[in-house]
Length: 402
Ligand SMILES: Cc1cc2nc3c(=O)[nH]c(=O)nc-3n(C[C@H](O)[C@H](O)[C@H](O)COP(=O)(O)OP(=O)(O)OC[C@H]3O[C@@H](n4cnc5c(N)ncnc54)[C@H](O)[C@@H]3O)c2cc1C
Image (cartoon, rainbow, N blue to C red; front, top):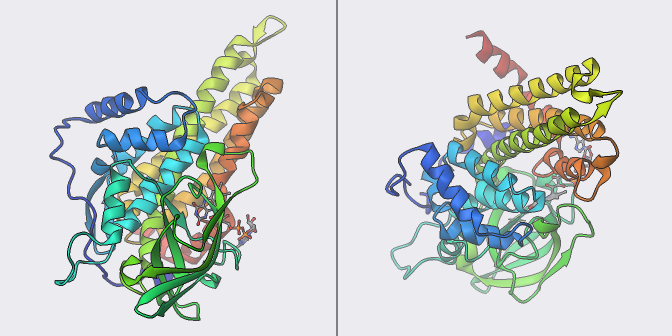
């Protein structure tokens, strides 16, 4: 992890510029804009319809505040508002679809290659970035590999070869959100053997390219996330489909994974808050021997414990949002994602239990809990995050003493 944190400066960002020239004057203003953008999208609509509405309303373009050496930097407050608004629709698959694109796939796409003097028109990454920003296309982030455990990213097997002036990508990816709806895949591939962070690059692979096969992941959970597995059978692409400089793949990924981890924490706060509110209403209306369950001291204490856990996660989001969004060090992301892992499941499990049999209804609290388990798996399992926190213990404790 520290290797990645130490990665030096890379490319000039190809992302959008500051989003202040949009006439927005206050957080309330932008929340209303978000609400208006989503109001016309029917409940349960496919995730691409949600994405399109956000793009057409300009919400996605305004999400980023310029960039740094490794790509666009998200505005944490806008990202939090976006995830809260999408979560309020109660469709976890759609929220996951938006989260991965907004927090990591789009910014990585925006870290694209600087234009050379000879280049005419936008590069493929720049053109794809623009389409995704407008909501007219989706992009999937394909990092988890068919040849290695997801927790062993440096062991990934998908190869990138340079042949006849072009690129050849060969391998496979598993459990990729938006795989079945995206027009573009961002594929993390190895350009040479080894586990050094400079051994990897990003490649832009159109899903329609010869040699690309997408299979649905066999799951009933998070249906709207269109999760799938991808086979890449010697996919040939022009050389300009490399995204960012060759060998900068892991550095760019590490930088943007911090943002995805912040987004996961923001979503977890929104989701647990929504389920807690629903649970509280049910407990107030459900009586045992003439008394609302809400008045039962055990129920109240357990509920309060859940509230405290979420309040702690919320405070950690506030504290670390700026650092995580800039991706300047990895500790912010590791702390946030660990805290999500320790919070979301405990809170959602208690809520589901407190909803009794009704928790088993289709789309009820038990399903929400199972779907939310992705917060402790996708983008890095909780155990791995805690391992990272332990690695950083000396640095963290020193910071707390100052
Ligand atoms: C719904 C969903 C959507 C996803 N979307 C994407 C996507 O868009 N793009 C993408 O690239 N990937 C995606 N993933 C894949 C995800 O990132 C991986 O599942 C994740 O990195 C874990 O890898 P794995 O499943 O291979 O588990 P493994 O690495 O095989 O781990 C299995 C289990 O072993 C334990 N374990 C692992 N490492 C350690 C450790 N160091 N210490 C202690 N215990 C450990 C944990 O309990 C872990 O859950 C998605 C996954 C899901 C479920």
